[in-house]
Every structure is written in structure tokens, then in C-alpha cells.
Length: 176
Image 1 (cartoon, rainbow, N blue to C red):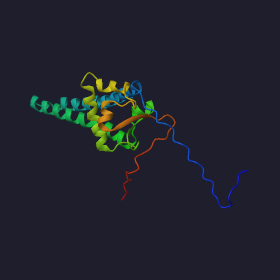
Image 2: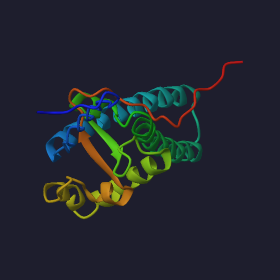
Image 3: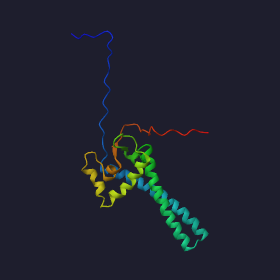
Image 4: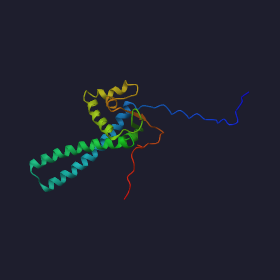
């Protein structure tokens, strides 16, 4: 026989969060391929427009060389900005969203801050240098982290069926 005190409250235990599912190498590679295609298509379009404009004007070879150097710098900034923006806001680039994966901080499971997202981008280059060995590390790591994830302290999770969170520390701008 169970005795219940008259003023005792029944507290329901909160359901345990589902275990994290880490994204595998094939899913991450396909998502990255989509993102690289987007970055390249936009870059090619901008380069086409600029080259057409320059061809109508007719510039000296020295100016053309400077424009090519500036274009390379702009292309690098565009690539870094693309990934850093998407990773630091929702944790998902368009390719990640298509493949239902998200880049999150390994400790807080929130989208990484912009500085960490930029660091992760440059660590991608480091992971690719030794014959892509840094990416293959995903196959042997228990949390499926490549070198770039370890260096930037991020993980890539499967988000099938989860809502997309937005960083809570970003305040909306006030309109004037």
C-alpha cells in the first residue's frame, strides 16, 4: 500500500535529450560539394561581369594584373565569408541544410561564434594539405571529427527532425 502525503507534489522527470548523431564522411563531403559549387558559380558570375566590363574599357596589362590580384583577394574573402556567416548564424550552410547536418560548438552544441567559424575554414585547408588525411580522420574518430573540427573545437551533427536554432546571443538590430 502506497501512502501519499496530502501536500506532496508529483514532479515528472524531464525526458532525456536524444543522443547526438554525428555526421559521416560521405554526408559531409556531399554537403561541402554543394557549397563549393555555390561559391564557385557566384564567383564565376562576378568574374564574368567584371571581365566583360574591363574588356569594353580596354585597360593596360599592368592594371589587368592588379585587377586579377584584387579579384583573388575578393574571392578568398567571399569564400571565408560564405562559410563563416552560415556556420556562425544557424550552423548550416545551404549544402548542410540539404544534407540535414549542422556544425556546432563541441562544448555548447550552439552554432560556433564567427571567430571560431573563420578558424574552422582555415583549418579545413590544413586538413586538406596532407592528401586529405585530415578529412579521413572522420572515419576513425568516435565523434566523427576531422582535424579541422578538432582544431576549431566543433562537431557536425545530424539534425533530421530537429528545428534549426539561431544563436541566442545575437541581439536583433533596432530600427531607427
